[in-house]
Length: 221
Image 1 (cartoon, helix red, strand yellow):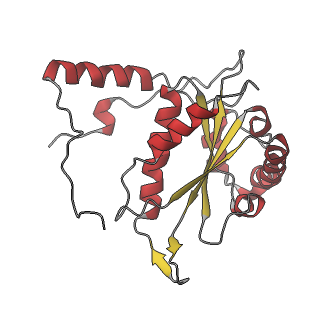
Image 2 (spheres, helix red, strand yellow; image 1 turned 45 degrees about the vertical axis):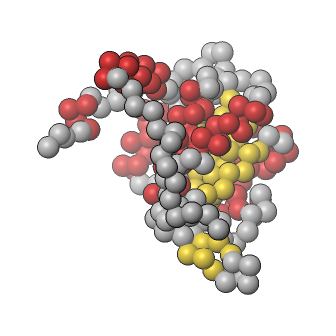
């Protein structure tokens, strides 16, 4: 039986100057992150993806239930089937499923029903949330703060992907139930997000968007 607690032996305090340098360096790297919608078909080393997933798995979670599962899709045929199913839903979305206000908000991103990046990118990471797990006797073990926990893990995954020198695109087709069926996932998992991962296409362009300044996103009390 594992002990209830262990020593925080891995914590390493930094001098204020070094701490500030680390924070500034990481911000400088992350502010260059952009979601891209055009990818090269160059393959990505599996070990890099594995380390990024391990980073995601360090995220805090409600009651340490770790209610996430990541399905890495590299098979061209499976990616094609995901694209076909996603585009079917996207056509319905753009043909009347979305409000005019929603479509106007999306306009600067220059998105549409075509989701060719789902086939072009070498890797799709489908993030699943687990509201509960199953005990050995078949009973349900409830998970807590599932969406928040999976969101934290996904954020770490995106940061890790960018830190490794790759590009990504968070993609959320709606509805997403087809992903569970297509990938053969159990009933206690629901699709949360598709993270498209790879090298950006050589000629890729991204929308000219600005992030809000610190004064608009933070308040110090």
